Image (tube, rainbow, N blue to C red; front, side, top):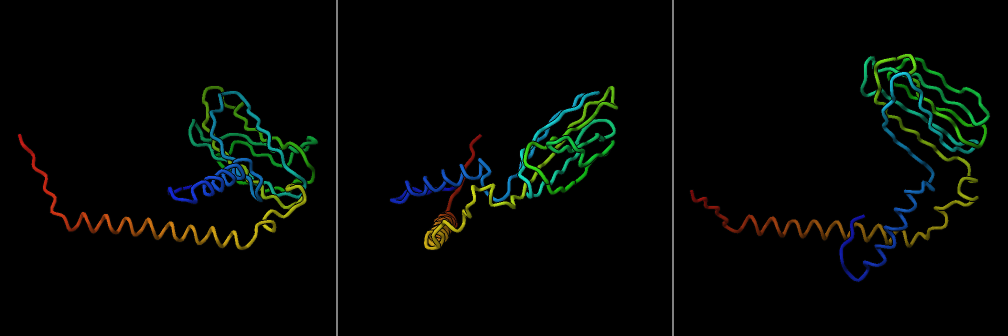
Length: 184
């Protein structure tokens, strides 16, 4: 959030705080998680992602460094069913529709490599489908349309003001004769 100082600054600070908390806690319709880690030679690392039934779960990974640029990958449901399995791949994208609530396990395997550690990037995207994930409420329906219009107008005015200030500064610099002298 970019905030200019004027009489509505406290309101803007509050709006930015609410937006930041909302995005940080992931209470919106989509929740993205990105992570890069070092997978030691001969080891397996697992991560857990809580997901609700009927949501959409997308996992993307890529080996960015290390000999062979390959790892094994498994996605396991909360009840222990193996949903996805890759062996010695450098990257992949998998989409699943969870059929149960709980913690889904994402495991990256480098046990086949006895000497080379791997740098692995992965991203998990959860597209929330169920209203149950929001406590049974549609969050956008609760925002008054007049408030949305007010905020959009505020953004437009702020952008125009910044543009005008930049133009004034540029005109001043263009019209003044500025010389730099260097003495040795």
